[in-house]
Length: 100
Image (cartoon, rainbow, N blue to C red; front, side, top):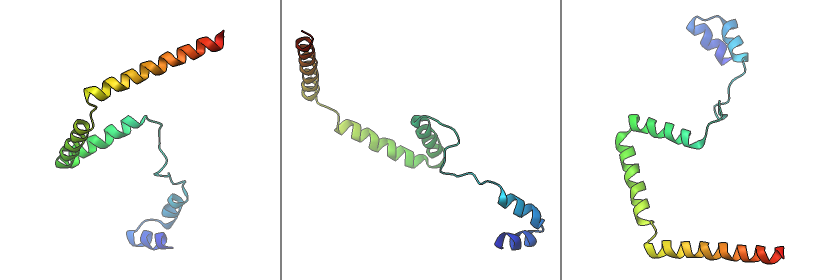
C-alpha cells in the first residue's frame, strides 16, 4: 500500500512499481560470488584507505604493536623447534615398532 502511494506521488505508474516489487529480491547477506577471505579483507582495507585514512593508519599501528609484543623470543622459538623434532622422532619410532 505504501509503495502504491509513493508511486502515485512520484508520478510513476502503479503497475510498474508493483511489478518491480514482485521481482525476486537479492539477499544482501548472500555472497554473489565465491571469493577467498583474503580478497574480502583486501577490499575492506582499500575502502578504509580511501574513506578513512587516519583510521587505517591507527589500525596498522595497533597491528604492528601486537606483532612486536607477542613475537616469540629466541628461547621460545628454540623450545618450539625442539618440541616439534622430538614429536616427529617419537612418531617415527612408534610407526617403526608397529610396522614390525
